[in-house]
Length: 320
Ligand SMILES: NCc1[nH]cc(CCC(=O)O)c1CC(=O)O
Image 1: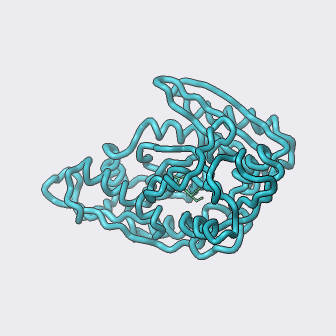
Image 2: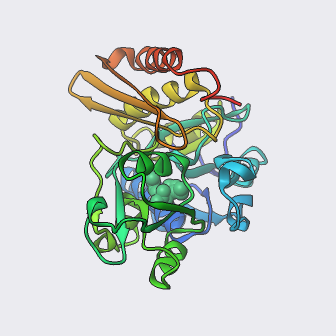
């Protein structure tokens, strides 16, 4: 029998388990953890007390002055939460899938995802309007190499500066006039109830999202089957398929976090459509792969797309 973390067996409906969900403390992260909690409560008909949300401060939260790619990458928002999971201080971790490395620490795995919502990026501009409406040389803030490269490709005239911090911090920098515009995940604004801040939604043809964007991942200890069983009714299998493709693609690209990479898989019935892109940081080089395949070959599709794109890209652009 595996060790079980909830204080009661899931098969006993009269007892309320005590599951601890670990998350970062930002408003966005808390919204996401609450969404997982609500999905679990609904799936099992539990009382709210059955789930406790535990906030954990991460290295990434403390770093506000440097690009994440310089400080050690996106895993910085995850590490302390995964340590808490391995130490059994929490039973499940909730993350933005986008923030997760393709390789997880030994002993942990992604159990599944909540239904994915909006995947697109949006422009938040002080003066409103879309990318074409930004004046020549306007100052756009972002901390994302992917967004910066795609933006440079479309608008090489813009001045792109480093903008760090959580969504509210970034919007504050815009309001104070430090930047003319910024690019954000539309889903983040939606979750914060401020989607009206978006002045334009960027279509995926021109502006491909990050792998995992818009998906909320639930991570557990590998082999903690009683905990995982509780999630079966709360997770979204279709989102799981899309993320399987995207994360396999990213794993094959094996890009350092200094490489602008984007990828999106969409499930349409029994088919998956995938598009992946690699750019040079200045946006001048652009490599794209488009692949389709059946849902039962999701992993293979992602791997093949990653390998093929990797083979197209000159050495030096990825990795290193
Ligand atoms: N980079 C931080 C981050 N990680 C996840 C989201 C948004 C939520 C999501 O994509 O699921 C954001 C904010 C943003 O990129 O604007």
